Image (cartoon, rainbow, N blue to C red; front, side, top):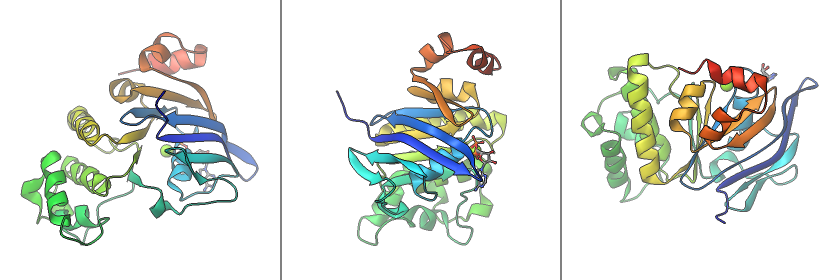
Length: 240
Ligand code: ADP
Ligand code: MG
């Protein structure tokens, strides 16, 4: 069997004595999209921040391609984890052009220009290479943010509700395009969302979270058809 790209085991995090991440274990396979799905406040973003390394867990381990990235003793810093980030509040740098934004995380060298072009082509934004973020629409900024996150070829992409700020009209298109680009790059993706419809549309696998715990992980079809309990069933019933 193929080894997971990302595996987290028994992650616990408390704030002020309250366990907001309560013994969470999940995995993401290479080239696949796993959705961490659950209602607002259940601990999704905290889990993602722990994986990214910007928050420290109380206990539990994180492995990337079988290598220990973080436990309570060892800790690889965020920039050493080969993780790309697309967060709601993780905007483009306003003072940098589109091209400079995409090049930002790349080591200086001859291939930078080619890689920036390649990514901007993939997200359909090569015409805008010299424009600045304020000249772009929300959807266009999102495409550039995707190109920027993918430029250093991260082994894992962490995405926290990246489509929530977009118009309904745009959202489906951007979701489809994003999926196509991610699949093309072969990146393993952990996508956080509170919308069952988004998870059903985008995920190869869903990890369903509630009150800090993963209550079920499996194929979208199985989770939808065989919910573990009434709460899960009703959560899926307002699918759109
Ligand atoms: P979600 O992303 O699923 O909406 P979060 O991970 O953002 O949930 O938050 C889970 C819970 O942890 C919430 O009740 C939130 O208020 C709390 N929380 C998150 N970060 C902190 C923090 N730095 N200090 C205290 N409480 C926090
Ligand atoms: Mg959140």
